[in-house]
Amino acid sequence: MRDEVLAALHVTDRKAVIQGEVFVSGGEFSREQAQLRYHIFRRELPLALEAIFYGDQAFFQHYPDLLNTPIYIYFVSTYQEFRGWSYYQTPKFYLKQTCSS
Image 1 (cartoon, rainbow, N blue to C red):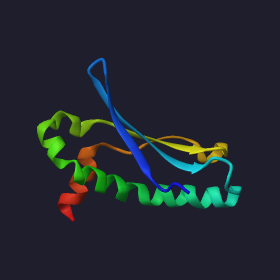
Image 2: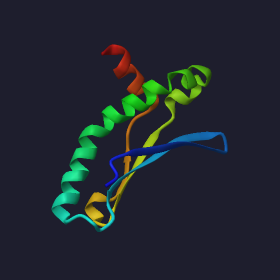
Image 3: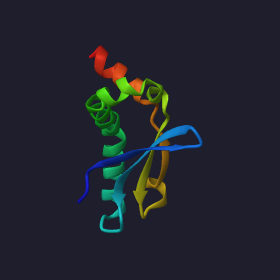
């Protein structure tokens, strides 16, 4: 079972985007189990992103323009209703959450 958030910064034509993915189901889970995993990921993903960007603060201090990079997360699932891209703000959003806590 994979309960992880994988993400990478992609820069093309001077545009940056952070693309990530979470593994919901590859067919080994029932629809109900996949639905539960999907809802847990949706609920916990902001906290995971906050932790990731908190750990990358030094990187963003050197490259502050990347603080406004859009974040898109792909939910991987064999079930169509739990598969697809979602927008998750920018690193700046998560760093503000961390600094204000």
